[in-house]
Length: 120
Image (cartoon, rainbow, N blue to C red; front, side, top):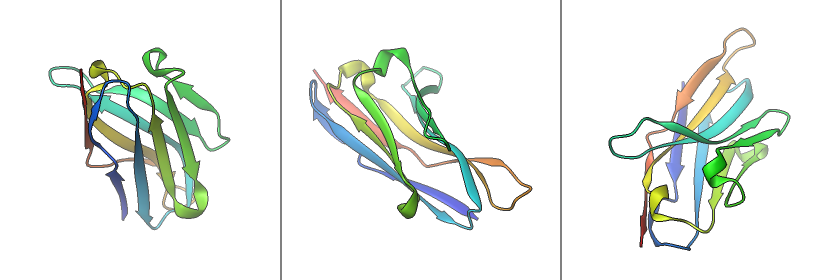
């Protein structure tokens, strides 16, 4: 089984920074892509940032230039560095990984979510 565990959320003032971490554990054969999503109250979950196995990155327009996704393959960990935070960034942030536990299987896994609250 695969588990994704996020950490690093919290309360920060507008203009501040946070770094989220997502550590994967379990029987992982390979990782196709990793990403961060967020869901604010009353809104749909939305993609924030994504990185493929070839390190190609994609960001939501509203976070470009402020957020950076990165990964440490040796630690099976993906990070989201969030700078210049705004109150509208307040949401529960979820880590997602598209990975294989065997050469034939490809599945999507989610973390439990971590709350990010930005005060004005």
